[in-house]
Image (spheres, helix red, strand yellow):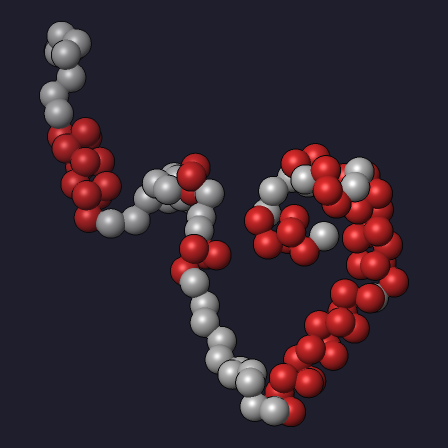
Length: 103
């Protein structure tokens, strides 16, 4: 189980020396459901913190704040704001018509 967690490989790529991947996965899932992994982590943290081997520093990586690729440059709803829009609208109204003038 720890080999798979350390490498990040799919369960199906588990080396044969560890047994059938289905068996290892089922045991992992059962331990997760009954809280065994949480208890193991808590035990290790408490033990190591008691002897001063744990440094409680938090680091935030900006890669967790990525936007979806389609989020870039999306059009906003509602009326357009800004000088450029007002200038374009004024120019559109001021353009002479291509139709012949009716007298």
